Length: 76
Image (cartoon, rainbow, N blue to C red; front, side):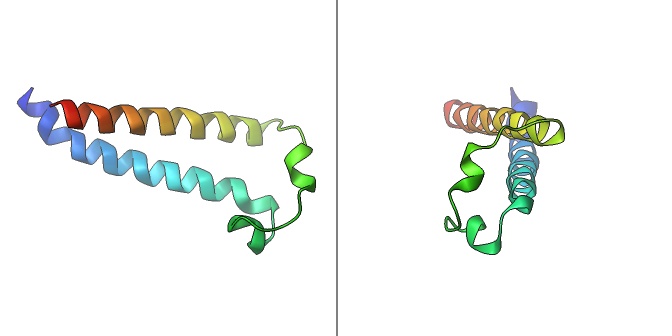
């Protein structure tokens, strides 16, 4: 249990960097205004395929792992 307490902050830092990076990589197809909530609504209706779908799914998994590690840090 002591090792988990020592390792958990580093795991959270790694997951947070991965989460921010994966979110920023998804914004490459939009304009600068799209990154801050603006932009057109046309891109909301397209289907994700290939690498874009993989990156989208990886972002969801990283976010779930980050939330789980945060709750784990609260419990211990």
